[in-house]
Image (cartoon, rainbow, N blue to C red; front, side, top):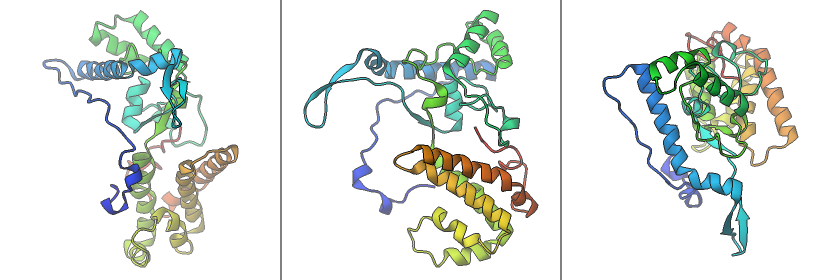
Length: 290
């Protein structure tokens, strides 16, 4: 799922700037759990160094010029950190099979019930409790304490002194993996399993080269797949599209909630129709609903 060179725009070619290279540490003659804890600690320590000045500016402000040349006192709170699911767990100091932004566990990911947010106070209190149970320098023992509290072994998260940064607020989905790749890995696969690859290819062959498939996917399946399946796929497509708006209003959040509610209401029809196969689908192992 890479954007072809023909679609690239010069206006966005320099939208991102490289600010640092992060090391990929390798530790010798240690157990995998200890290696994992040391690696995540190195990550947080490196980010702490790179973001040091931003944290100072967040609290004290920094004088910078705006686009008109006027001097402004700028504050830099941690508003958004775009990351995929594994990196979100790393940042949230959370163990595997847990939500980085809520208190849900993997067995609850597929449910329609919303869970309490994973706040900064909850995470920092859990880390403090782990430190009272075991010495963080005794990593093998500390690992066991962290496992009981669903932590990954971090003692000083880089965001802990970055104003009031809260995990449930600043962690932002990686649209490429958590929306676009998800769409092709699951809704498209479900459609192929139900309507057949030849039928879908027939419809795809008449599309213009750069037409967004997600926009026309609901129209291509209506009348071919069962109505409840179409409702489920339309709902999840709507849920993927809505967050990509330039501005998110209260009505947008309401539409997101309604789309997610409709998907959970109709999703069993996908399994009944034979669209979902195997054990690793978000419908069988639990959709990552947070």
